Length: 297
Ligand SMILES: Nc1ncnc2c1ncn2[C@@H]1O[C@H](COP(=O)(O)OP(=O)(O)OP(=O)(O)O)[C@@H](O)[C@H]1O
Image (tube, rainbow, N blue to C red; front, side):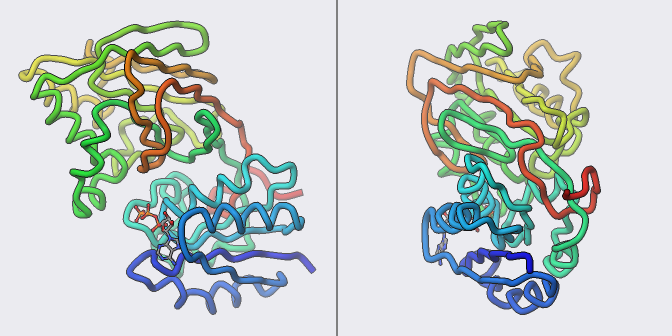
């Protein structure tokens, strides 16, 4: 019988995670299921790695983007990578949106054990990510983002803090090298995204696909107070082609450095700092999802 590990973060999603346990086990009737509850930081990473080491067929991550990121970090480096299921219980759930996994936990549970699709995973220094990396003015910004902002804007909530900082005339010279081409600019923000779902802004990166093998980078140059709001609007609505303050880059590898060791915001958390090497692992993990790109072997 196939084996599945269900990793539940009981603190996610108004602490309803444990309620879904029974439903998940019922849905996975073809599997021998073991349930692991996380108690704190990196538990999901440890459990997911254990599932790889023990040749599990599937791992289900039940929680928010933080739990998903931790689980993926346990799986990405391993030679045997189980199929991953996602039951989104967070406030943002960007990756679930990108995979067209319903944000209704019951509907997401109904996908477990069914069709699968492969998706790209990003790597920044020695850490893996599923959604977005952002650099610039973030140390202060992250602390200023309210839960309400995070819920409505997703991981781009801090962009507004970036806009605020730009109005205060803060910017930094950063160097971005994308597949060998170097851009040295005074930047307000640099973001690198994997999918077409960044917060609730699906227009920002419409041409991106979760399995296109590309990193999608946006350099947002520092600009005048007058122009900054227009630039933010152009970015969020995908009208960056006519905006000289935005440079869009598609590449397989990017290197970012600056005169200072700025923090890297990775999938919403401050993980490490510059310099950064970002690369893409094409179609690296298979997920239970609606889009049936590839069936499991
Ligand atoms: N039992 C627990 N009690 C409290 N915190 C926990 C527990 N288990 C894991 N955690 C912590 O929860 C965090 C992840 O939470 P979650 O999955 O809700 O992510 P999130 O980033 O808060 O999601 P979102 O922003 O989408 O709401 C991890 O940092 C982990 O350390």
